[in-house]
Length: 193
Image (cartoon, rainbow, N blue to C red; front, side, top):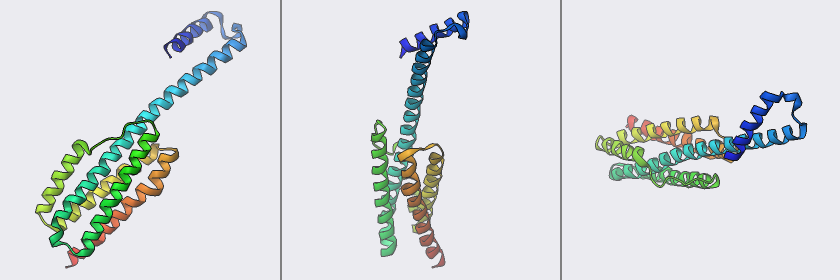
């Protein structure tokens, strides 16, 4: 790659000295094609690295969400059977979403995040605090987390392409919307009681 950059610099100075009209056409076309290839490869590498970075951020969010839902189940004695089933269903969907994100990171040649990281620690502490205030507050906290996740997915969708875009559009964003709606229904029922 360094050799190609050097060749491009030499070629560029040659153009400056000789003028573009004096450069043999086959030589110019070949060097420009190689330069375009280097630029394309570098651009693709940067784009892929950025995609892996974004996907790992989303993966940490999914791991964190799954952990938060599991933490909320600590209040199961104060929940109805339907509420417990819904929290378990959402938690399982977060586990599947995390696995889909891991697969996508691998597909792009990256290394998937292994934990929720600092965000997970914060989310666990936040959910634990919400649990102390009761089931209604715990559900509100979960709903806020789902809304935050939806926002993250929608932002990621703007730059995504190919299979990553399809995953976001057809699986992850619809799941988030379903989770928000389900937790909203539970919250409404609890407020009505």
